Image (cartoon, rainbow, N blue to C red; front, side, top):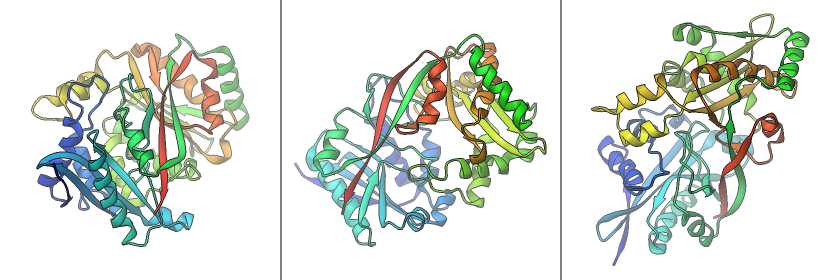
Length: 376
């Protein structure tokens, strides 16, 4: 049997087949959560994704006797390379059957593309920016994923390591029990931070008001708070406008906490969303004709799980109790809505300050994922 690797053009039709393969491969798997197909296609199209201002990419598909058998996208993020002084390419959107010939051919194509452009290293799985999925699952294969994370079969890490890739960094994820009330120590820390720094929490009744008043500031805060994190790619003004339009309009306002100082400058933000995992599974990644109904029910109706999408604190306020202030605001809302558990999503394994905030809650580390590196 022969393996053929083809470059996928960046048209909607070709990318739909590319994205669909990454869903069909997991048919019957109870832990896989599909992405929204339309979002995934948009991310891979230069005309739609503003990250292509400073990124270039090439997507490949492997075919075994004419049948789809694997996929991978090679990405060069020039912004990150300029910041780090490294000639790195990324691989992402990677899926493959359990076949060494397929993975050999697939990664060889991606690596040769990167070498031809002067790259010296390949890292991944990574996307164009931190807004994309990253990190290969290496532990927690029996746990249902989230909309913000990658699920992959247990055989993936073995294939990657056989090809000469080794650990670059790990992320951990926690499943946290939502308490009925704010823990006393958490509340004391929050009160101290509020008084000492003259901070207050804002609530919003209008998404438009949130976007108009703090949309830009929110993503600028993310750029500041995440600037030193692994592989971070600062969001450009064009990307900020893209994500404001794309995401802020669908969030539940009672799942957002915004902290400001005496001059109404944004100091911290916590953004969460009712879990869409089951809804995405039911919709099979499609909005039409009826997938949007499942998603709307998950957002508006009864839901036991909340996804903690991000917590961002202005650097000069980090480790000063602002995290406690955010969750002192969010926990009563979570309890009122009926959430029983929270998914932390990705946290770098060496980010002790972030993980310390969970010490006051029953929790378990239930997933671990990895970014790999290889010299080219």
